[in-house]
Length: 417
Image 1 (cartoon, rainbow, N blue to C red):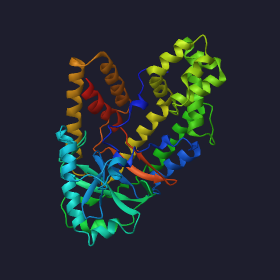
Image 2 (image 1 turned 135 degrees about the vertical axis):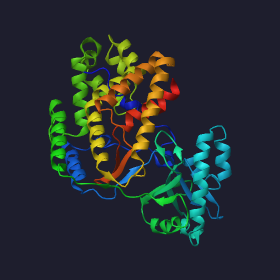
Image 3 (image 1 turned 180 degrees about the horizontal axis):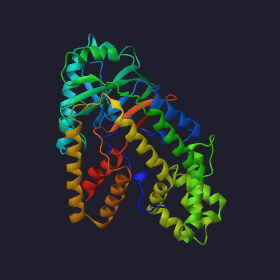
Image 4 (image 1 turned 90 degrees about the vertical axis):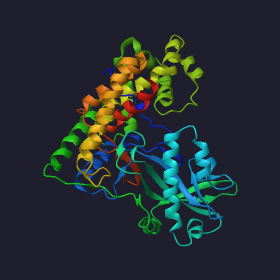
């Protein structure tokens, strides 16, 4: 098992990624998917059968609506949603992020653009508050000219993804639906405002060797599942557990103690891989009287590396898949600026690597090495986009490619050095 593998558990974006909209899942995060489901996804991607694909913009998410008093308000969390005003005003946002100028710049610029768009909607109060106990909220992604996070863009813009409908249950607002109903109204308003648009669709081009590419990826995926003793009907969860058992068995004295208790093995898997923290560590220790020190040591921190090592084949597979799909995409924001965007990312990467190698802690140098190895395994490819977003079997997901290790290096490692 390779020790310099990707820290999957650590690959969670800064809190500003999701806001009220939450974290976007990778295909393998849907652990109920079978091998057959994943192979179907690959076939659909390369044959043009997945529609309504949009770009995964490297911006900051915010939701916006108009309250009954006619005030445009902005939502980052349930506290904002359930506040007396139903969200933050632009002034509130300026106060909230007064100590984070770059964050404030993004939200204030977006807030002004969104306000202009909403003001161009006829009877906007009624549009966002169609009846008592119901409210519509626009889900938006915001970028500034330059870098909002790590991806450079030529100009500031707000992309309107979809419309969320909330219902009041008597005590608080709860999400009831997410759809594109009403986006046509917002689109008409966007036509009157610079820097505002409905999130444009991305097209995956079909090329001469598309069939060969998809066949090669399906063979890779078959091999990954077969090596774990899994078959067509096996789920991602089945594969993860089989890999966990194999990892423990092959790790000699460092990991094989986990297998001394069948019940303990299941409980540790639930706690470490499923994130079920209600699984009591004290109870688990009682199942390993001779190995309590190992249990507590791994549970404190090392389990993250175990998860990363176990997930490495699928993690790498989907990043490679993402790179290949992104190369076939038409319609990304940086179209015409691809070379400049990639050159800027490589320049930023070189600066961070030199800085961390010179000034960083041992821990952050180790993290940097892991992510550089991860990038090298992907051919050191740099993409001019974060990735794409689409639905498969009624589940929303993303593919990102090389952006994942780049984001770790230019994001968390850069600022933690």
